[in-house]
Length: 291
Image (tube, helix red, strand yellow):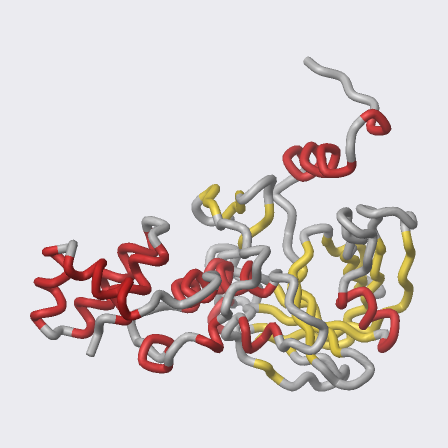
């Protein structure tokens, strides 16, 4: 066994130990707006429920370690005192991950992540329509835990309205724990799916992924590709060029055979197979070759 004094570690190293040991952690998919009405959406795994009467959820956006700046979510909640906390299930995990990209303050992460903005009833921030449970909240207190990079900020969020998709309810009107199919955060690139166990989601590009909103309609509107598939496609720095697509097709006889058949669904299924294996650029090239 090793024994460590926290003050002897760099913040990133300590952060890694904490996140690697404390988990799985539920994810607060937090929707806010700034004072000008610009929507923002970001996930936070320092999150849980802490009271039922009153109903209180707390999540904690930490100050950035690299430059000690604050995140848009924290800035917005301090300014407006409102937030919607959306629960993340497996169906939207890739889109959730894509939304964590450090886009600019006025960039709408709903659009980048290909998620639907749903008007709230009692607060101004939008809900994520695809989320199985959405909590409209009033922020009652924000408690800073420090002033240096890595310091958390506890956002006390009182639930003022709850929205639940009926397809996750059981015959008694309670939430069916299998149907909600929640995911939770672990260390590194690892997540835990309550129904099945651990799986990996590569972190979003630091150079900024193009986002689902930049995927051509013929691909984005596919009936074969899921939101998770689109989330992977949106996490690339740029779309492959025509020359790259042509070179890929010419060197893969199997792909040429599939394309020659002209069955769009079969071609998209092949791209889906590449995505499942983590070969995102290969999937892009197959999809771009569809005429």
